[in-house]
Image (cartoon, rainbow, N blue to C red):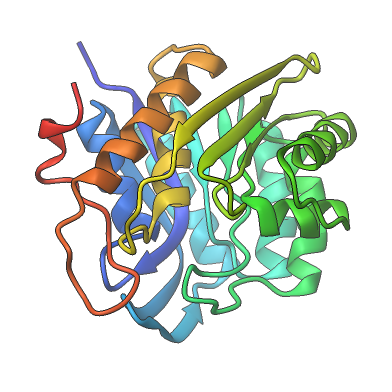
Length: 265
């Protein structure tokens, strides 16, 4: 049986904790076949991002064409895009693609480095209309909805508004709230609400959580799972990777994949 073919459209993280590198690890461990379209190259480590250089939009689309025409695509994960021009071209390109699309609206790296301009973020609203689900963390949700949600209730309210306005499902991630229990809220296209609450995992090694979760959901959708099941499995995978973190680097270190089996069924 052939594996689900998952295309990750995202930036490269030289430190290996996030971006394309995290996508490949996640997709592979969950049984998918990982393909990539690199949107930008970063020089970064656990302490921060030292340099960013975008890949031209035409080359990004050429990468997608290359794998699409030969290998095929069962689902797409979109991460860092980096430029308004790429967002516009990718929105137009996706008109002809009929597979599940998971959009992680990357705006700021965990270290605090800005990875999307205001113009690029404006284009995200058009991107969401082409996607199956968007997965913002709390700061991203705030910028997408021009709001300041500070409680799970406010987060849910803004997620519902974003789902209604964009026409796609929204997974609002509550890790930036200071509560002891982390609340994540999924609003599907019908407006139905699903909630998860789990104890916070106390670790500074959380680099790449958003990339990993969105890739895990895309893999599940590409494998034929429903949105709720794909999200539930993806969250469990991220929590296992957090527990398996190898403790690398002096800053916000990567999660663990090589020893994830001790925490992952």
